[in-house]
Image (tube, rainbow, N blue to C red):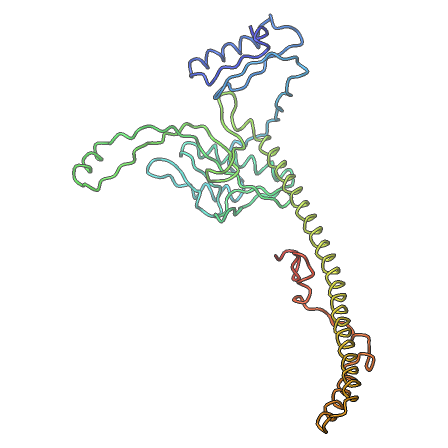
Length: 358
């Protein structure tokens, strides 16, 4: 049937009963003796969204997900890590039986039911044991301005690991005492929902909702079976952060080199500009002195000059001699060290105060 449909069947977001029926079809296909050698079944959307079933050659099939080795989980907390011990002492259940240490400093951040406390601490202790075995540091980690939680540090990069228990939300039913309180006070309040523990634990990479999952309890496996994958993800993340740090350092070095080149060019342009301004002033003085000497020569040919006129021509002659650049040093004075303000017009967008300024 699938081959007749072109090798693929797509079902648009089926209802839960229909999806369950298709899952049985997928299981039957995978185990069917009629499936030709060299072919395999691949599917997407088994749990949600559109469902796609394909029959593809084995060489085109994506690689199977890696199988993680099983890390041992201790049976007791005897001799546990100090942060685990501090968590056990700080884990106080609320009136609803839930434990929340997400705002407690120096302990692992938990959002679990009291029945899951011991198992949660054993899982964290297993992670601490393996981290120290691999040469990583385990300790309190402060992230996003929040108080420190259980952190594993790989090559200086820390990641917090929190434990969260999935819950089932049901509508809250008022108890007898709540009904009495409701009748007695118009300010009575009761939560609209109750959250029942499911026993399904999650290891997350932060203690708030924006963190991502590292390992979950599911029907086919437990978090205990996925502890190796936690380290795989943490090590990949640490490698990415190392690569990002190297890229940032390379960018800073490139920015520093570009800035130094811009500063060197700016100094050259400043010197050229200063010399050009000196030359322009010399040319103006030279033309003005020549014009003044011509003015003097023409004036002295006049026959109707008064004593004041002759005195004025004598002063103009003296001034023209002072103005003439050939009567004094032609070369400009040595260029002083330019100030940042001097270089700013020649930096073309760079700051004279450093590569990080704008």
